[in-house]
Length: 439
Image (cartoon, rainbow, N blue to C red; front, side, top):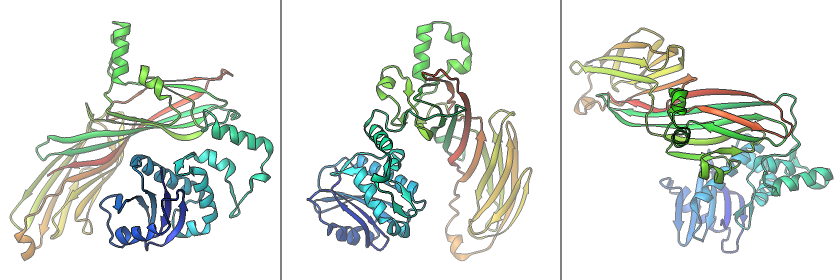
């Protein structure tokens, strides 16, 4: 449980303070200001001062601090703090000192609804906006709401599905699924993979009427192996893509997913919130299909010259293409002149970044392009003593309809009592996380 919450600016001034328990006084904010903000200590988001624990996050110039004297669950506290940031941003776009000062009544109202005696009660933005509304800078009183809306608020805040009301209606029932993956790679100069993993998320945009029951199917290896053993040889004849599943290391679901159902038979069943939401996050480290391979060759020709050849090869189908591809090739700090020749795109030496930036707007699949550069170096007494550290080459890119992990949506079933047939759309996108190749 959280004993107190403080919102402080970069100087340590308390903008908002909410005390939930008697074991904390407002004076503990001074200890945080002196020990953390004053000393500019940012090594750890948890600070123990005496017998008081301070757990904080920083957003821009604002510190959001949770305080407790108990042995509290730190993960729960940080989840509440991050939820607070999302809620504040949904009410006023920018979370800064001016917006907090201009909306302090709204902030106190939200803190009273979100936490009760230090326990999190309601962090759903949709539910909060039903009865904490904002109009012309003032809060509308609850008395002005209609009686039927008040009862609807009560049902949604205390019901089994607080994220959705049953009276939603659409003329056109549609469902959009976006599978977005970030590829992280660290490859040695010899071409050996030192670290590779994929962090993915399944985003959904839901425009469905009523209270639909959805069942989501993915090519999870556990499910695929179970189906193989159940169906015998039938699954083996259904094609390689369906037969091969991916090994998911970590997975996190939205609160609408029935976790008990997933634990028992690995079925993702849920009643979706209205609008856009994140259904799940996952991470995988096995059998990753790297979208791009970088082959660097860098030769130091004495102390005043450098020859560089970088070949980038796309490893996906020729029917696909990479968009906004950016290759950052580091150069020594004493670089004077760069003569660059590229087969595709545009390349330019950026002295402020000590790197050659190579941009390709459209990179076709199953293709390779090469950049060659001659770098002339300035003679420097200080730099001659210290060898060039050779920072890694990094990449940025986006590849549509491609997943590095092999994740695919097998099916999405929607069942609703009115028996409508929704229109479903699925899109895949792979982008670079930390994609580096040592030279």
